[in-house]
Image (cartoon, rainbow, N blue to C red; front, side):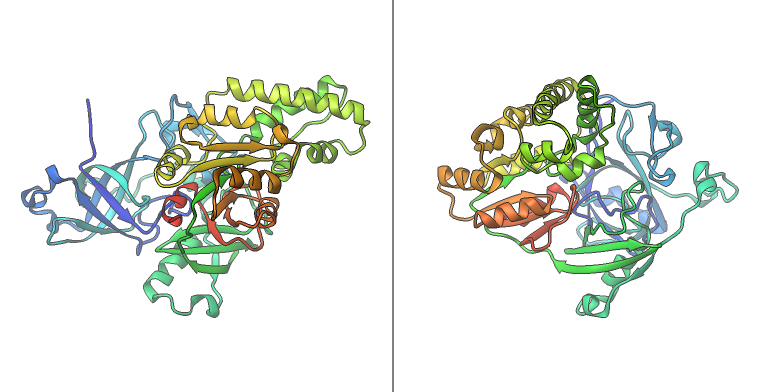
Length: 431
């Protein structure tokens, strides 16, 4: 059976992060369903206005991947306990189909359908629309599986008056509802971490402590003029830390160092030059041993990443880079070892879209100098660098260019020119 989208839904969610985990949880989250031309017929929705709610069958379009896993780790279980994929509503399924029950708000003159309580990203393909039938679809005595067992506690949301000033009351109410659902990655509860979501044209940054969410910053999403975009790798394009941690642990043990490297440890190291990483990872180790260990770390890391068939890139990376390359040069600059950028490009299938690249392993220079090299080679007058940690920002500013913080990555940045909460936001942010 071949199926194709009959429509696309437009919502206030430009990215996956922050979307309610189920439909109806944020009643005010609106969506506009726009039919494809061949299905844009008034008779197709005749009688639809008699119903109050609809079922939408849609595409988890940002979660397509080859293969599938029999078990998943639902956020409600902290991302650690696993259940069968068919005992969950995980988007990572053999067939990436979503099912949502939404409230019908009205049918526009152009045939588009307005709904509320959405849990879909802007631009999500819709495969079918069916009316909700209370006599058949409502089961008040139904059991909720593990969701009954673990329950759910909403966060208390605090938005200082100064941040809320000038924001439409309904939009502000929707933001409160979205934040109260706790959009964080469930197994990461770092009280110092500044999280960020985008909704309704706003970027909202916040912290959470003791079930209290405090908004730290609310900004209108602004466009940045640039004649080139330079990209970091780890924490910006993909998260390789689980794989690399396993490879490095093997290297350490084979050199008589009986300790385990964990992904969170690497997230604090990645982005730094390799010589700095070596000193911080093995501070009390003889230089000769340290060099031998790091050499083996790099060998095992490359082997592990080469053999890996799982997609470890952030959502929409390849498609976003392809779209960006149509309007400006896309380059990669990293503090990584020789060959790493080439490996990343090959794994992500983005070689044809990358105009230039440079790294510490090839030049022996730190990131700021390599940014300057790439800018000079390309004759760029207003390039922008995209990275996820303070060191990336420092390098960009040292090189005299603007910095965009990838807040979904490994760390924070204190003075970026712009913030993105998903890589896909670059398409709208860059002019």
